[in-house]
Image (cartoon, rainbow, N blue to C red; front, side):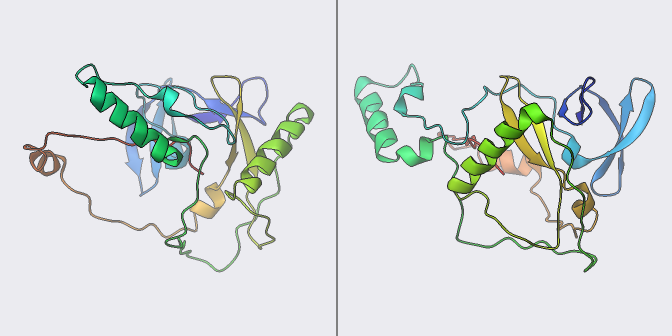
Length: 208
């Protein structure tokens, strides 16, 4: 769970694991926190799964040197894979891109803007926050705007000692109309893969 740090309540960090006792509505869960039950929004939770290696910052870029070749690949197949990795190097980069094929719209239950005052940022974090925001702006991930909506920034300390910039959208989430899409049954999905021989998985370098 994403909770305030013990020594500095202005910063947050992942804590847990905790047991989910019940689902409350669509986006909230009741959590058992050492004998006490509290309700939290889904945005503050993440699954207790095997940790992935920490990735570089916004501006770092990875080459084919990070590829791991399967033991069953021949030398020729490894060469082909290396050529493909170099040809489509942007697909293997840690630099986040942007999607322009479709614009995502969020429907709200109220026309009254959700506004919150910014959280105080510790002085030691201010320069880091400016740098991270400048990097994201240069990469086209964010842009300057002056809308009537405002949500505070939260700086989260990562395991490798670097910082991650997050936004506390809880007030906006309360006004958001959830889109419920029917999902495929897991067993039916696996049955459709029964005769397949090759499987791929994607690990996004970073999302925002």
